[in-house]
Amino acid sequence: MKKKISIIIGLLCMVIMVTWIVGISTEAGSTEPGTVNDPLVTKSYVDQKSNEIMTTLLAKINPTGSTDESEKIDMKAVYAYIDQQIAGQSGNSFIVVEAEVGDTILCGGGTELILRAGKATVIQGENGDGLADLTQGVDLKGGAFVPMQHHLLISRDDGRGIKITEKAFVMIKGAYTLK
Image (tube, rainbow, N blue to C red; front, side):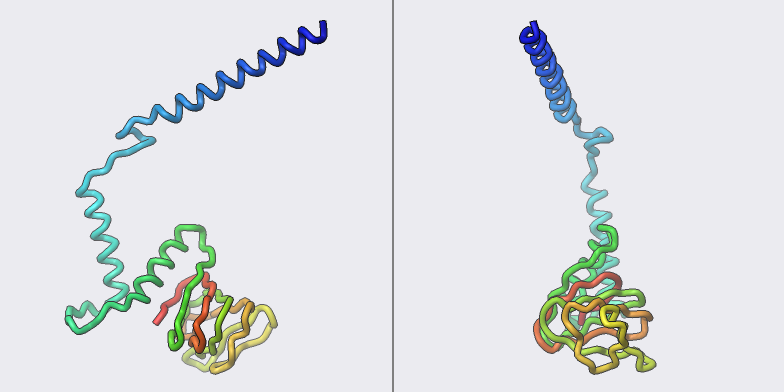
């Protein structure tokens, strides 16, 4: 008797599971193009949004609006801007920036840095202020070496940042300019 009840319960569970799986798969495959779940867009809409992005990007790269052909587009600035936009959409998380010898990373107020690999020195602000090393609880003055794996904070947007002296990977959260 117990065996028959166990078999009936098992079969009932299987029927419920199969019905549930079939229902989910039917619902997932029923999305029609042009509905709220799968909207269609026109080419003109995509072109408009693309032009808006390019206009914003060009304004960031060339703020003077110069059309001088000899002026080269700074691709580092393009990549930095794109990284910032992506990071802004993903919940203000750290992004990894690869920097070469001689590059500078100038930071906005509230920006956080962590030097993961390579070497860099501190660029002081307009008033001679340095970077806050939150790991050690000290202020790093202009020209000081940036310690690896230390959490650094830039308190104001006054030209502070780091200068790369050996190819580096830097984790950054916040506004920055890579030059």
